[in-house]
Length: 169
Image (cartoon, rainbow, N blue to C red; front, side):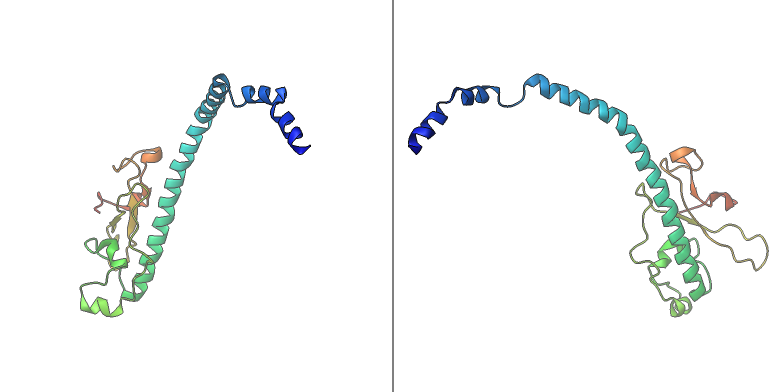
């Protein structure tokens, strides 16, 4: 009895119809792809804009972190790094024995980070405005175009306006 029931189900005309209609037609697939392309063209630019904004935010955050590490190091060794020593003094002990004795670094968990565009941050000391003035260093990046000045994504990030002369790396 069970065998007869199984034979009837196998020979059922409805099942043959279902097999012929199974799957999607080429037209249905093309329509779905067209809809996805329209959505991508509408949403894509805003996603890339958000990515660009996040790079600027990341650069500002990293600069604040580097400035805080420099301030901590200054409290311990009594000075900021020279432009020659640069940001590497945050992770590498100084050559000078007197300074090395008070250096308690590294002052960063990892190596000095690169800016969001993959380039090293610039470090400079502004000109002292009067004798004995402790000059706070400027950490900055030139932005996406890696050239001084600019607007939008190409704008300099950091306190570059405090520099009296073009800065060095």
